[in-house]
Amino acid sequence: GNKDGYKDKDTSGQIPGITTRRDAHGMYGTKNGKYLHMVDRIQGVVEVFDTKTYKRRTYDLVSIDGKSGREGPPGPCLARSVFDDPNLVLNDPAPDLFEITPDGKYFMVAFR
Image (tube, rainbow, N blue to C red; front, side):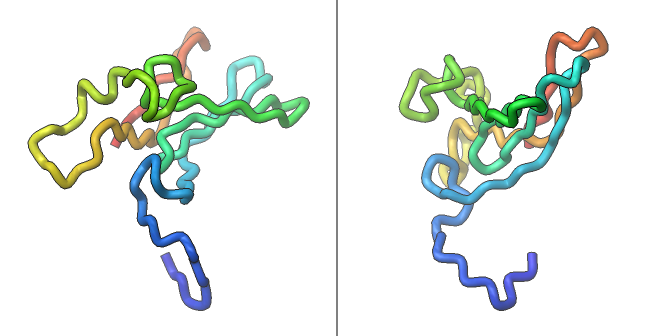
């Protein structure tokens, strides 16, 4: 994007787990309207907001428990990482857009 006049002190690029940058992307509410879910492509997390209290909860898409991040036991994204290019970051799901299932029980997430 246009960074004319913008002084960004974060020179970490877009490396997950290192950078502090964010990339809020897909957003979707639950069928009952109680929660709003938003994915962050750079950090590999889902932010969940309570629509009444505005309380935020975060879970990651890289650990098996959704709380441990890259320091914890890896989740399924590591097993599906691209291993034939040493320049790519492993266990980087980069969540993109998502949609709720017709029954409202699950979200289906597209990864980049």
